[in-house]
Length: 453
Image 1 (cartoon, helix red, strand yellow):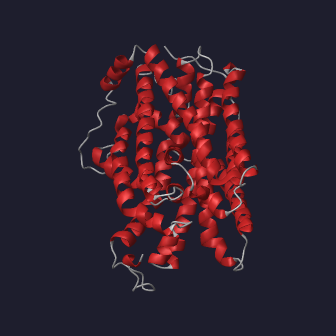
Image 2 (spheres, helix red, strand yellow):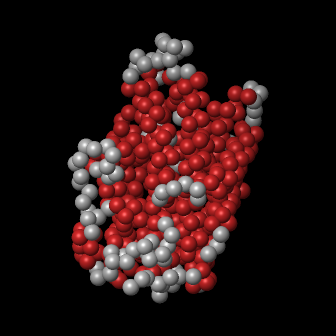
Image 3 (cartoon, rainbow, N blue to C red):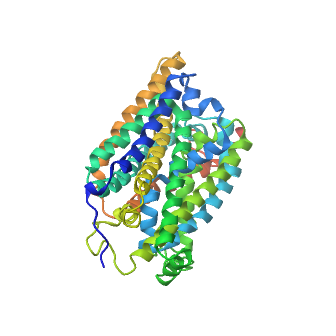
């Protein structure tokens, strides 16, 4: 029998209050760090938190900036549609951690670069640096647009509110607290948002198991539905989720987002010692694995619930990206606050990605395009103001790109992977060439070798 259809007015006021409260607290943290204490008055405070950050908050912040609302919306739907092959990403994370800690992070930490792409100019030449920076800017803004559209679509599905209005609210809050609070605000709002996300994942899984006959019943349905046939050793590169595709493809994908990406590297070097940075990478991997496991369990729950009644086929939803919010409303219709907590979690993950990316983008844009056009003596206060203006300007740009996302075909998770993968491969190649092969140089910089660092 088809599942119940939910109209916009089915959502009571307290569900809205849950995620609005999270938005308010995120904005308050930005106001606190931006208007009191040091007020993030210097570039070092604004971009690196004065290098006084703590290990676990940094690890959580890096993790949240990577999985975003796309993970909470897209991964369970992907598991429901294609199976749990995405969970093999946890093995990729281990490979990423090892290479980051022993090869790439030591170079970035010792150089203390505002922009990781500055390394490419020192190692090769300015043309190489600008090429990499432009690729990063284009990919990041397109990716952020997808990240924003994902929770907006989830909320619009459940409430009937216009998707672009929701997008504007999410963007406005993220831009606001990132602009005034810098990295410290980004990290501590991420801690708040992490609590919300874990609370939502745990409650959703508990309700799934409770209403669908327990963990074993859900697991057996996943097995019967072929969702756990994940160790496919086929070498055919056209297959979607073979073991080799996951290990190779996702290792490159994740490493491009953490090992060389300004959003991750900026936070790792904000710690007071390299040892602390290395441990933060380890905790980042553990955090990501926990979140991915819970998302897979939600996907298994949807498999058990809709094994004989696909909501897309029965026209309850119009695309699989709407499946998770629909599922949570379906199983938790009589439990107050669960759906509101889920929406708050999706908002939280999205805000984390927005704030982390904007803070890193401001440093990259300033260092690579603005600083060399200013007079030689510019006060730290003026530089900080410029960084804040860049955050606002870039935020407006990706807000405009959001309006184009609805015209893309395919699931949100797949779109996000495609957008970032286009640039990650070439950029990883450039950084690896510089750090691993000392004899590789540009014509301009032919006598420059890695050991000179």
